[in-house]
Amino acid sequence: MNRINKLFRKKNKNILSIYFTAGFPGLDDTVPILQALQDNGIELVEIGIPFSDPMADGVVIQQSSHAALKNGMSIRRLFSQLTDVRRKIEIPLVMMGYLNPIMQFGFEEFCRECKRVDVDGMIIPDLPMSDYLTDYKPIAEKYGLEFIFLITPETSDERIREIDENTNGFIYMVSSAAVTGTQNSFINQIDYFKRINAMNLKNPRLIGFGVSNKATKEMVFENSSGAIVGSAFIKALNETSDIESAVKLVLKKLDN
Image (cartoon, rainbow, N blue to C red):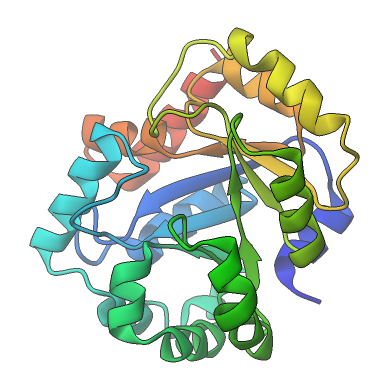
Protein backbone atom coordinates (compact mmCIF):
# COMPACT_ATOMS: atom_id res chain seq x y z
CA MET A 1 0.00 0.00 0.00
CA ASN A 2 1.20 3.50 -0.86
CA ARG A 3 2.54 5.48 2.13
CA ILE A 4 -0.07 8.20 1.56
CA ASN A 5 -2.89 5.67 1.93
CA LYS A 6 -1.22 4.12 4.96
CA LEU A 7 -0.97 7.52 6.64
CA PHE A 8 -4.65 8.34 6.20
CA ARG A 9 -5.70 4.84 7.21
CA LYS A 10 -3.70 5.20 10.43
CA LYS A 11 -4.65 8.82 11.13
CA ASN A 12 -7.41 10.81 9.49
CA LYS A 13 -7.32 14.00 11.59
CA ASN A 14 -4.79 16.67 12.60
CA ILE A 15 -2.20 15.74 9.98
CA LEU A 16 0.44 18.41 9.47
CA SER A 17 2.11 18.60 6.06
CA ILE A 18 4.85 20.99 4.97
CA TYR A 19 5.76 22.28 1.50
CA PHE A 20 9.24 23.48 0.63
CA THR A 21 10.97 24.46 -2.59
CA ALA A 22 13.78 22.10 -3.59
CA GLY A 23 17.06 23.98 -3.87
CA PHE A 24 16.11 26.67 -1.36
CA PRO A 25 17.67 28.17 0.66
CA GLY A 26 20.69 26.12 -0.45
CA LEU A 27 21.08 23.82 -3.44
CA ASP A 28 21.84 20.77 -1.29
CA ASP A 29 19.31 21.41 1.48
CA THR A 30 16.69 18.96 0.19
CA VAL A 31 17.52 15.93 2.33
CA PRO A 32 18.49 17.96 5.43
CA ILE A 33 15.10 19.71 5.28
CA LEU A 34 13.29 16.38 4.91
CA GLN A 35 15.22 14.99 7.88
CA ALA A 36 14.45 18.01 10.07
CA LEU A 37 10.75 17.90 9.17
CA GLN A 38 10.49 14.18 9.91
CA ASP A 39 12.41 14.56 13.18
CA ASN A 40 9.95 17.25 14.30
CA GLY A 41 6.83 15.20 13.65
CA ILE A 42 5.75 16.36 10.20
CA GLU A 43 3.76 13.53 8.65
CA LEU A 44 3.78 14.30 4.92
CA VAL A 45 6.00 16.55 2.80
CA GLU A 46 5.46 18.23 -0.55
CA ILE A 47 8.69 18.84 -2.44
CA GLY A 48 8.26 21.80 -4.77
CA ILE A 49 9.98 21.71 -8.14
CA PRO A 50 11.12 25.29 -8.87
CA PHE A 51 9.71 26.92 -11.99
CA SER A 52 10.21 30.35 -13.52
CA ASP A 53 6.48 31.09 -13.75
CA PRO A 54 4.64 29.46 -10.80
CA MET A 55 1.12 30.78 -11.43
CA ALA A 56 -0.54 29.44 -8.28
CA ASP A 57 2.13 30.72 -5.93
CA GLY A 58 2.37 33.98 -4.03
CA VAL A 59 5.42 36.19 -3.72
CA VAL A 60 7.17 34.20 -0.99
CA ILE A 61 7.15 30.88 -2.87
CA GLN A 62 7.85 32.60 -6.20
CA GLN A 63 10.98 34.16 -4.73
CA SER A 64 12.12 30.83 -3.30
CA SER A 65 11.56 29.22 -6.71
CA HIS A 66 13.62 31.84 -8.51
CA ALA A 67 16.38 31.53 -5.89
CA ALA A 68 16.41 27.74 -6.26
CA LEU A 69 16.74 27.98 -10.04
CA LYS A 70 19.57 30.47 -9.60
CA ASN A 71 21.22 28.00 -7.21
CA GLY A 72 21.18 25.42 -10.02
CA MET A 73 18.25 23.20 -9.02
CA SER A 74 16.70 21.05 -11.76
CA ILE A 75 14.45 18.00 -11.84
CA ARG A 76 17.38 15.76 -12.68
CA ARG A 77 19.46 17.16 -9.82
CA LEU A 78 16.52 16.75 -7.44
CA PHE A 79 16.13 13.07 -8.30
CA SER A 80 19.87 12.64 -7.80
CA GLN A 81 19.56 14.16 -4.33
CA LEU A 82 16.67 11.82 -3.51
CA THR A 83 18.43 8.63 -4.67
CA ASP A 84 19.07 7.28 -1.16
CA VAL A 85 16.43 9.27 0.70
CA ARG A 86 14.52 6.20 1.87
CA ARG A 87 17.48 5.09 3.98
CA LYS A 88 16.48 7.87 6.40
CA ILE A 89 13.07 9.24 5.45
CA GLU A 90 9.97 7.12 6.09
CA ILE A 91 7.14 9.69 5.76
CA PRO A 92 5.16 10.09 2.51
CA LEU A 93 6.73 12.37 -0.10
CA VAL A 94 4.79 14.18 -2.82
CA MET A 95 6.38 15.99 -5.74
CA MET A 96 4.68 19.26 -6.68
CA GLY A 97 5.53 20.87 -9.99
CA TYR A 98 4.10 22.62 -13.01
CA LEU A 99 3.45 20.79 -16.25
CA ASN A 100 5.98 22.62 -18.44
CA PRO A 101 9.24 21.48 -16.76
CA ILE A 102 7.84 17.98 -16.15
CA MET A 103 6.92 17.62 -19.83
CA GLN A 104 10.37 18.85 -20.83
CA PHE A 105 11.83 16.14 -18.61
CA GLY A 106 9.34 13.61 -20.01
CA PHE A 107 6.27 12.55 -18.03
CA GLU A 108 6.94 8.82 -18.07
CA GLU A 109 10.60 9.38 -17.24
CA PHE A 110 9.45 11.60 -14.37
CA CYS A 111 7.16 8.84 -13.06
CA ARG A 112 9.91 6.25 -13.51
CA GLU A 113 12.31 8.39 -11.46
CA CYS A 114 9.66 8.96 -8.79
CA LYS A 115 9.31 5.21 -8.45
CA ARG A 116 13.09 4.72 -8.39
CA VAL A 117 13.58 7.11 -5.46
CA ASP A 118 10.34 5.90 -3.84
CA VAL A 119 8.27 9.09 -3.99
CA ASP A 120 4.60 8.41 -3.26
CA GLY A 121 2.64 10.90 -5.33
CA MET A 122 2.55 14.08 -7.37
CA ILE A 123 0.67 17.34 -7.77
CA ILE A 124 0.64 19.16 -11.11
CA PRO A 125 -1.61 22.20 -10.51
CA ASP A 126 -1.98 23.17 -14.18
CA LEU A 127 -2.79 19.72 -15.57
CA PRO A 128 -6.44 19.56 -16.74
CA MET A 129 -8.49 16.64 -15.45
CA SER A 130 -9.50 15.61 -19.00
CA ASP A 131 -5.85 15.33 -20.06
CA TYR A 132 -5.02 13.44 -16.87
CA LEU A 133 -7.71 10.84 -17.50
CA THR A 134 -6.78 10.20 -21.13
CA ASP A 135 -2.99 10.59 -21.18
CA TYR A 136 -1.48 10.65 -17.70
CA LYS A 137 -3.47 8.47 -15.32
CA PRO A 138 -2.44 5.13 -16.89
CA ILE A 139 1.25 6.09 -16.65
CA ALA A 140 1.00 7.32 -13.05
CA GLU A 141 -0.80 4.12 -12.06
CA LYS A 142 1.80 2.02 -13.87
CA TYR A 143 4.42 3.40 -11.48
CA GLY A 144 2.23 3.25 -8.37
CA LEU A 145 1.97 7.01 -7.92
CA GLU A 146 -0.98 8.78 -6.34
CA PHE A 147 -2.11 11.86 -8.27
CA ILE A 148 -3.43 14.71 -6.14
CA PHE A 149 -5.73 17.40 -7.53
CA LEU A 150 -6.48 20.85 -6.16
CA ILE A 151 -9.99 22.19 -5.60
CA THR A 152 -11.03 25.77 -4.78
CA PRO A 153 -14.24 27.45 -3.59
CA GLU A 154 -15.09 27.91 -7.28
CA THR A 155 -14.73 24.24 -8.21
CA SER A 156 -18.11 22.74 -9.10
CA ASP A 157 -19.57 19.79 -7.21
CA GLU A 158 -19.50 17.82 -10.46
CA ARG A 159 -15.75 18.38 -10.91
CA ILE A 160 -15.04 17.60 -7.26
CA ARG A 161 -16.88 14.28 -7.56
CA GLU A 162 -14.99 13.50 -10.77
CA ILE A 163 -11.70 14.12 -8.94
CA ASP A 164 -12.84 12.01 -5.99
CA GLU A 165 -13.84 9.10 -8.22
CA ASN A 166 -10.61 9.09 -10.21
CA THR A 167 -8.00 9.49 -7.46
CA ASN A 168 -7.08 7.57 -4.32
CA GLY A 169 -4.60 9.68 -2.35
CA PHE A 170 -6.07 12.87 -0.93
CA ILE A 171 -7.71 16.02 -2.26
CA TYR A 172 -5.83 19.30 -1.83
CA MET A 173 -8.39 21.90 -0.76
CA VAL A 174 -7.18 25.38 -1.62
CA SER A 175 -8.51 27.66 1.12
CA SER A 176 -9.45 30.44 -1.30
CA ALA A 177 -9.27 31.31 -4.98
CA ALA A 178 -6.17 33.42 -4.37
CA VAL A 179 -2.51 32.45 -4.75
CA THR A 180 -0.48 30.96 -1.90
CA GLY A 181 0.43 33.12 1.07
CA THR A 182 -0.23 33.47 4.77
CA GLN A 183 -3.62 34.50 6.21
CA ASN A 184 -4.70 35.43 9.73
CA SER A 185 -8.14 33.82 9.60
CA PHE A 186 -10.33 31.52 7.52
CA ILE A 187 -13.62 32.93 8.82
CA ASN A 188 -14.81 33.68 5.27
CA GLN A 189 -14.12 30.11 4.15
CA ILE A 190 -16.38 28.31 6.64
CA ASP A 191 -19.25 27.87 4.18
CA TYR A 192 -16.84 26.39 1.62
CA PHE A 193 -15.41 23.98 4.19
CA LYS A 194 -18.90 22.91 5.28
CA ARG A 195 -20.02 22.43 1.67
CA ILE A 196 -17.14 20.05 0.95
CA ASN A 197 -17.64 18.14 4.20
CA ALA A 198 -21.31 17.64 3.33
CA MET A 199 -20.34 15.92 0.06
CA ASN A 200 -19.07 12.85 1.98
CA LEU A 201 -16.15 12.27 -0.39
CA LYS A 202 -14.23 8.99 -0.24
CA ASN A 203 -10.85 10.74 -0.27
CA PRO A 204 -9.48 12.60 2.75
CA ARG A 205 -8.79 16.33 2.32
CA LEU A 206 -5.87 18.49 3.34
CA ILE A 207 -6.30 22.27 3.30
CA GLY A 208 -3.54 24.61 2.21
CA PHE A 209 -2.86 28.19 1.04
CA GLY A 210 -2.72 30.53 4.03
CA VAL A 211 -2.20 28.24 7.04
CA SER A 212 0.18 30.28 9.18
CA ASN A 213 -0.95 30.47 12.82
CA LYS A 214 -2.92 28.64 15.50
CA ALA A 215 -6.28 30.06 14.40
CA THR A 216 -5.94 28.97 10.76
CA LYS A 217 -4.42 25.61 11.70
CA GLU A 218 -7.21 24.77 14.17
CA MET A 219 -9.96 25.76 11.75
CA VAL A 220 -8.36 23.57 9.08
CA PHE A 221 -8.04 20.68 11.55
CA GLU A 222 -11.74 21.01 12.42
CA ASN A 223 -12.82 20.90 8.77
CA SER A 224 -10.49 18.39 7.12
CA SER A 225 -7.90 15.70 7.76
CA GLY A 226 -5.14 18.24 8.15
CA ALA A 227 -3.15 21.26 7.03
CA ILE A 228 -0.54 22.01 4.39
CA VAL A 229 1.89 24.77 5.34
CA GLY A 230 4.03 26.34 2.63
CA SER A 231 4.66 30.08 2.64
CA ALA A 232 4.99 30.21 6.43
CA PHE A 233 7.79 27.62 6.31
CA ILE A 234 9.59 29.40 3.44
CA LYS A 235 9.39 32.61 5.50
CA ALA A 236 10.86 30.77 8.49
CA LEU A 237 13.76 29.56 6.34
CA ASN A 238 14.36 33.20 5.38
CA GLU A 239 14.19 34.39 8.99
CA THR A 240 16.56 31.86 10.55
CA SER A 241 20.16 30.81 10.06
CA ASP A 242 19.64 27.03 9.92
CA ILE A 243 17.03 24.47 8.91
CA GLU A 244 16.31 23.08 12.37
CA SER A 245 15.61 26.57 13.71
CA ALA A 246 13.27 27.26 10.77
CA VAL A 247 11.25 24.10 11.45
CA LYS A 248 10.93 24.94 15.15
CA LEU A 249 9.98 28.54 14.32
CA VAL A 250 7.14 27.59 11.97
CA LEU A 251 5.82 25.01 14.45
CA LYS A 252 5.90 27.67 17.18
CA LYS A 253 3.96 30.10 14.98
CA LEU A 254 1.35 27.41 14.30
CA ASP A 255 0.80 27.08 18.04
CA ASN A 256 0.41 30.84 18.69
